Every structure is written in C-alpha cells, then in structure tokens.
Image (tube, rainbow over all chains, first blue to last red):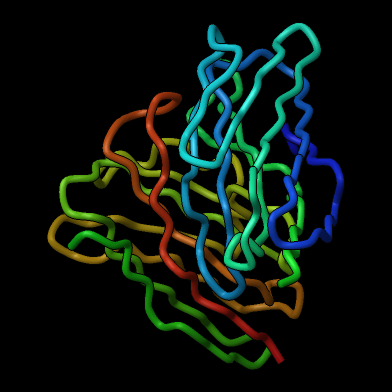
Length: 111
Length: 115
C-alpha cells in the first residue's frame, strides 16, 4: 500500500497565488521527501525534511512536518505557470530501503 | 554522466512478446531503483540494486520480470511474455548513498505499450 497520500488530488490556481499540498503517511519515518514531475518527464527531487525537523525552506518552497499527526505540507509561494506539474511526497519506511511514493497532487497554475 | 539515461523512450510490444529496458545511472551512484508508473499515477517500486547486487526485490512480479545491473553495462529490466497490464512508464533512478538520507535522481522513463 502507498505510504504517502497527497491531498488534494488536483489543484488549479492563478499565477501569483500560493499553492498548498498536503501529505499523510502511516508508519514511522526517517525523513520525508517531495518530488515534482513535469508532463512526460521523470521525478525531480525538491526538498527533504528529516523527522526531527518541523519546517524547511528552499527558495519559494516551504515544507512542514508534523510527526505527531503523520503529515507534511508543501507550500509554493508566488506560483508561476512553470510550477504546473504533479507533486509527490515520498518516505522510506522504517527498516526499508525503498522510497514509497504517494499518488500525487496535480497542480495547474494559470497565467 | 550527470543524468540517468533510459532507453528506449518508447517501446511497443505485442502481447506475449519480450520487452527489455535499459538504464545508465549517474556515474558514481551505487544504488539503482526501478519504478512502474501506470496512468500518470502512483509509482510502484519494483526492485533496487547496490552496484550489481539485488538490494530489495519485494516489488517484482518474479514470474515474468527480471532485472540486472552488471559491471560496465547499463542496468536492464526485462519482461518476458508481456501482458496488456504491463503497459506503463518504467522509471529508473539512482542514488549515491543508501537509504533514507539520499534523494533519488530519475531518468525520463521508458513508455511501454503492450498491444
């Protein structure tokens, strides 16, 4: 079964607005990662947040992690049309060497 | 190289035929992963390697799927006797380190269509 579940499944916003995507997971984790997939391409790693971190920033990206609720959020500020893509959270389950992905949030940023 | 290279980009096979996909990981990366993505949705883990050794094969349908990573050769994923349900995009990824601390670098995938 999928470790991460993203919410919402799809999100459509206007350029300049902020986009927030959420991810929930079920088991203990060492870290949580967010990836982006542009149409017809592979996944691109965006950011990694460790289990002892609560918030992390990278450019226009802000990730939060709440291990008590087993959830994470990805905020993209001042969105651009080029941010249109699917976004996936992923976790390594405790003791496993495989990265397990959620089903993704499809973000559309309208110019 | 600095990118994970997957070949071919597209592959069409009739049901029952064999399909073979190739992946050249980033130079210096010791770990290789294969994932299957159906209908642009979730990524299903298939198998991982540490150099030429199988690391985790819990996702592999073993009766028809096999994979190898041999020294000085691209890694390969082979599907014997393809079925319609094997139609998907197969992604290869590599990482420098083991496990939880290391982000994966993905190739652009091979789209397999079984007719």
